[in-house]
Figure (cartoon, rainbow, N blue to C red):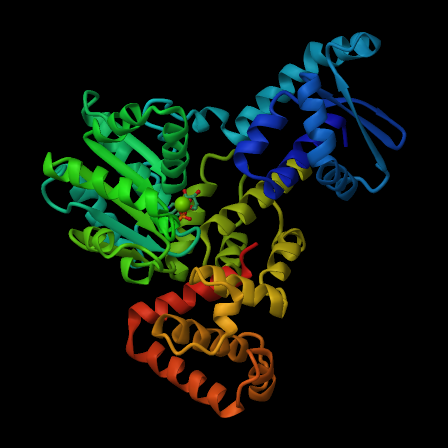
Length: 457
Ligand code: ADP
Ligand code: MG
């Protein structure tokens, strides 16, 4: 395998292990400058990049390379400005780096990530690239309706659903379509965390007026992952006023969240009622046919043929998260390019084994408790305590239910671990939660989401 191919494949692996933003920032313009027996020298564009790669991603890089070629045991970095290696770099750069960059551009579609600085929208999220299935039909229809009746039909539109199911995609598709059809309209996309960050900065720098205009002087405001305002009073207050201001002017607002407004803990009632005041649409898990359709759409135009059997296999083994489905597909694409032939089903299974195996990993007790507590915005003491307050009792019962259902703990074991209770209390809790899940779809979704979070990261 020549070093060009090797780096291309390694990047494919590395890409799966770090965030897209970091990947684009630190791996753009990198290449293999030299390969000397067991050591690979990576060419990087600056000292700064070299430091980052060395300090943050060295292990990931070495692992990826070693995985592809077990003889590689060491990785070093060379900055192109470095006199010592200038000649080498020049030689390497002449043809190779240019080619390398082209491949990388093609592989990752760098231009797709050109985020519009004014709106913060990523042009890759469009209605055209969004596959409609029974899981997202309603949310999709509502989103399209919003683009056609800006500020008048569903205001606000509130879209909720689990991780990696297409909320951000749909939210940005609204923005991209509105922008395309009317360039004059002002659009702003921000995650609720970004909203908080900007608010904090504005308070610190005493630039509240600028902050206010930036969010209020728009025709369409898109706020992603609004569940993160939970427990942040000042953010909630400011969001409430922003909402009212826009709403009064008939400006459109769209929110996304990982759960319905009712299930967001620690938010002010007045904000919750605003979230509920327009249209609420959920996105559920895609069925097999939708997963396959997504895979088929995404595997087109990638320049390598992918066997239908392989696509079906991915759709079968990765049942929920579409982001994971994409990750699996990217891995297949990278390996097909590396081998220069379409992977067989057997080869694909091998390539995906680590992803598939990690999906049902064991989550330790401590981690489970930590996640449940943070989901409900409680401290672990509150979760374990003996208070009979409704907002504490329910999460406590859910915790018991999850320990029983997911970790398969015995009732007595749970009783002991959750603050020395009687085991009949645990039996009662599990029955109650189980019954409520059957009766109440919103609650059922809440528990599903919680379970899903246990296995994510
Ligand atoms: P969320 O915001 O719900 O966590 P995203 O919108 O980021 O999820 O979606 C995760 C990935 O899956 C994105 O790359 C997105 O383009 C893709 N995706 C999700 N739903 C669909 C769909 N229905 N059709 C095509 N791609 C989808
Ligand atoms: Mg999202």
